Structures are given as C-alpha cells and as structure tokens.
Length: 208
Image (tube, rainbow, N blue to C red; front, top):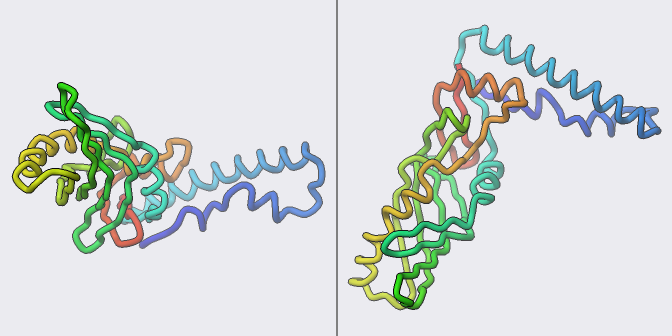
C-alpha cells in the first residue's frame, strides 16, 4: 500500500488559511501552535497504528525532493594525481534499472601548473542506507560517460582511470534523502526500514 504523508497531515499554513475569524497575529500564532501539536500527535498515532499492523508500507519521496537534496551538496572537489571539481548536477531517475543518473560538469586540473580542462560526465548510482546519518545515500556510483575538451581518446582514457576513484570518493555516500527526525512517521520509517527502490518519478521507501 502506498500513502503520501502530505495527504494525511496537511501543512500547518493550510490550516491557518482555511480557518475563519483569526484576524490577530496572536490568535493566528496560537492556532498555528495548536495545529503543530495536533499534527505531531496525529502523526505519532498514525505511525503507531501503521506499524502495529505488521504489513509492509511504501512512502513515496517525490523526485523533486531528491533532486533538491542532491543538488544542494554541490559543487564538490576531490584531489589526487588530478584535481576534480564537479558542479551543476542534472539528476534523473531510471526506474527501469533502479538507478539515479547524474549528469555533471567537470573541471580537471593537474599539478605543476598544467592548464585546467573542462568537460562533462555522467554517473549512475544505486542506493544504500547510512544509519549514522539516518539517510538514504548514493551507493557505488559508476562513471558511465565522460568528455573533456582538448583530450584525444588515448589521453581521455588515461584521465578516466585517474578520475574514477575520485568520483567514488566524491559521490559515494552522498545524501539522497534524509529522514526528518522531527516527523513521527519519518522517524519510525528510519527505524523500520525494509528497503527502497527507484521509479521514474519517486524514491519509494519501504517500511514494515
């Protein structure tokens, strides 16, 4: 069964906009606090009922939220024999293969004052769970395509071999969705996580 948290617990501002007769700032503030408390209690009660049923449930996280979470962590830079800077992520969901696909701009530079070169690359990644971060994270990102201006195929192949481990260091473990520990449903979801999968439109969190 799939349910959307936003359909169960509307945003507090929605309550305020629909409530008649609240004209003063103090009344609106008290009403907002009341609904925050109600939403918290309702969420906790709903979550308790949910998990007491012993069934597996699915919570869809919209692709837009995952994109926002990933995007805010860029630019990233890692150094080795080469220095690699990754920026401007364009995130896609490949539901057929269960992968997150990220297209990135890349800037590659080397020691000894060699000129930096720019290009683009594509990374495909599975998902894992980081218990310390209470987050779904990228797992084992793999470089699928790369293009760097001014490099022929031989030199690009050499650069690729040097860039691959830096890509892993930069992207492996990157947060795709952080469970909100102030939300009763998401807090319990992080404790009863049964898995996750990617569709073309959502990250599906499985809980039981």
